Length: 208
Ligand SMILES: *Cc1c(COP(=O)(O)O)cnc(C)c1O
View 1 (cartoon, helix red, strand yellow):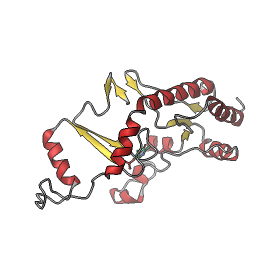
View 2 (view 1 turned 90 degrees about the vertical axis):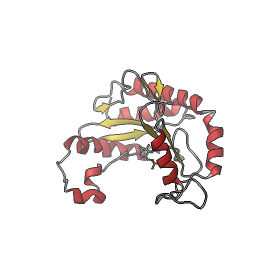
View 3 (view 1 turned 45 degrees about the vertical axis):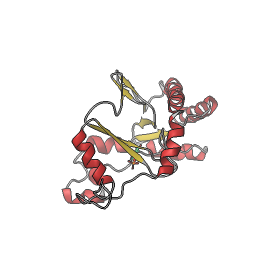
View 4 (view 1 turned 180 degrees about the horizontal axis):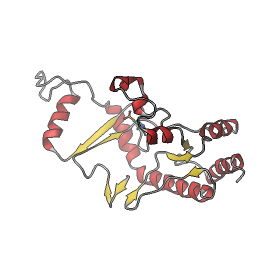
């Protein structure tokens, strides 16, 4: 689990949402998610929203949705949950290896684990400075290294929110960073020589 000041996420604050999308650290075999809360009123409200506004069969107190998780997903998650800590440990080791192999490459900003936080590296995202992100992505693709963009278009420039009236320049920091993020390959089974291969290619792109 990710932690903040010694407490696992979901164990503090009013509520926390978890995605169990298949690609996550704890992923189902299809769409799934969960919510933790210590607030009983909120819990009652969410219970109703999840199941067509109903808790008691045939009685609908509010207008709800069908947000129930399939039982098969819960069964998969319960088995995978046993391995989560082991997988997290491996993800963290891979991140440490990436950090050590890339930390002297100029033009790349590495992820920093804030003090008091335990990062679980669902993604290992670097920032590629000086407009070189897309070039590096292309270059790596040619070496059979797939990378991800999380995400290239900031929310205020999405069509879905165009009625809010924001435009290019409204949030310069978000805009700059969305052009710099690059998610490098990372999964618990990734072997050290694969990480070394990726870092080698990145270094050769930068002539580092
Ligand atoms: C999990 C995740 C999301 C959203 O996942 P949902 O299952 O749709 O809630 C979006 N972006 C990133 C980077 C994520 O890791």
